[in-house]
Length: 348
Image (cartoon, rainbow, N blue to C red; front, top):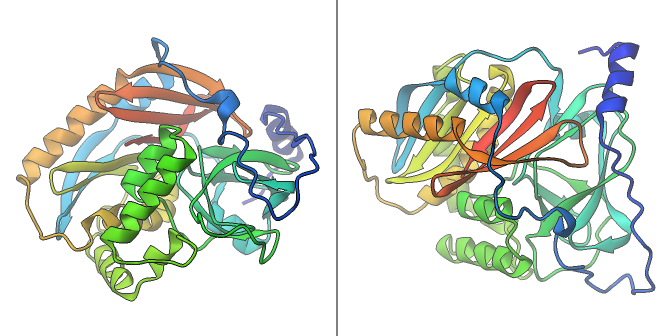
């Protein structure tokens, strides 16, 4: 994918300056610096009574389609009208090309790392992506559309490896690991760090996957969990429903998450890691139907209608575009907007 000079300049202009500019301290390099929590300055307060016209227009054109099942997992495929083309790389694609750099700050602190897109294509980072390495593994706090040639920008993260604060290297890698539904919901709620650690511990206990450093990644690396996730991925293969823009996933009778993207190709590339994260909630559970396909389809449609009417607030972050955050019934919704399109929307 190629980007013209005009596109490049436009991207740089739209990107929100994410200057690192963090004050230096005399704290020792071996001390954990929590500094309150990720994104404290922009921690969402009560949802403002605002409706996003872009989200409403996009979601109203989405319809619930076929239902796929594996064990206790039900997936309702969501179809709609693709948005205007926008060249976007995923976290893993940008890392594989060497375009995306992720590192600790000069003075490392738990709730922030530094990202830089040195490529010519925008990079989409999703709230819930797991970053491995640095002084401890982290999880991204919010969606971020990082423009080409972004320069270094500080982004909010949580720790998901409580027992380590020692750098194997200053940089981070990504292996397609993603926050499971309960952990992802806490991230979107901007829970305090202690609740994030509690949720990591709950998933580790449920999977019987202890770790000397209390690492969330240890759950993904347990052989029995890998077998379960591989089987779920084979059983719920998105290419069986070409053209889908997203999916609503239910575990038993509960919602694990709904994700929508402006482009079916982007959804296809992001789907495997989203599915594997959601399938963690189905590990060790008996297959319980929880209802017919029609019931799950109706629930997905009701969720879409509620999302279109969700009231919330709009704000900028360290990337291009803006984040619309809203309440969807008892769930939290978030949508990343750029140039009138919904790049990604999620309901947890």
